[in-house]
Length: 625
Image (cartoon, one colour):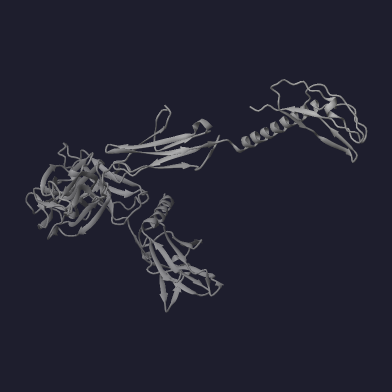
């Protein structure tokens, strides 16, 4: 059983390291950290003390090497006695060092082991000691039974017994209770419903049953009282008195105050405990323990210090400026006993009775300074003022003129614009007018190739903003609304004038752009080529027919002979054909031969011969119109 307690107590000490650490640093990377710095242990148990240490890994480019690590409580002339070499700790001390953490374990503790334990380590560059050390107190359990009567007017009254030790024991410790030396149960507390004034109650630790507490008698023979009549107010003088009505030897009195659910704080060892100026923090449960040579009795009372509101404050959620229409919550809080009730004020005007003020949808009218008043029967306190800033868009914009009525040309005029807004609004002035002559842009510009796309854009300066309408002139085409129109896969029939009409309630203006659609380049080439081919074909056909109609007049005349045209040709002409025109074509076959061809014959022709040439005549009839 002793070993189990030693193990549980060791574990609790390790856990306490996380909660109560003390670091000792020498600077430049040297240091020792130990914890906790105060340890209370029972005689015969075991304890574990932990320290960690650090040092520079390198100094001047050379590695630091650790030599000794040890614990000591004695030193003489800078000589430190290692606990392992101290005869009083023979076979009771062990070291365990891993990764710069050293653990000291001491078993079979004795009251003489109470001391300040220090850790020291040495290196090739120096020695270091952790200060302060860990103070160990070794004691008997020194248990006491404290009784507390219930205040809820139960019958029979309920009494709670608590086993208390001035040495801070780990939670894992097991308690046992005895009534008249008869074992009852295992728990730190024991609840009594019925008992006799002569019943003696004891408590002990499971592992230290041989060290029980003094006998405790739960009786009405011990009274505690308070000097103050009625409610106890802050800063008043209060005296607690403990009195025993037994006729035994006068007891020794000790006052305790309960902290939390388990701990007790020893206050004094007097019959009276005095508060010269009691504070709210003094509220709580107080116990008087009367110790007799072989027994003890206890009684308790509760003090509740009343006071007016303190530290009244206002909190806002969300914090900072809030936009109109968003939720907002204001909360008032204060420290008071009894609890305070709250009232709210906006701009020094009463708003409501409540701790909270909620705005599901805050408005611009809710903007202002808020404060709350905390109040109970012992006083009142106002919080500091909180400004709630509500952001909202401009409202009710208005324009005023410095002159009223008719304004004479050339006189000065001042126009002022005003609006309710948070943050303050920025102002921009516009003059309302009919639209200017619109500007029309065609993209791409110039002639538009058939099959491509074109975009027409219309723009105009107008206030209020103008609306745009497009239509094609000289056609009953539907109107198109919008600042831009796009014609995809444009064709030749899309050519023409397009008008843009801009209009607002003050007037309208028109502007026109001409769209010219031309054939694609490949079509022009094909058309030109086709025309050239057609012309060449016509010329070839004409030449062919001319060659077809070409006929010879007769055999050639003898060389050097010339026919007698007057005798060989006898034309038959009507009287209308009075004008005859002759034409001849002379083909030179050789320097001595000539050939004449008639382009048209009228009547019979005969061949004749002359001595030096042969001649053929043709007659052309020309009739003037």
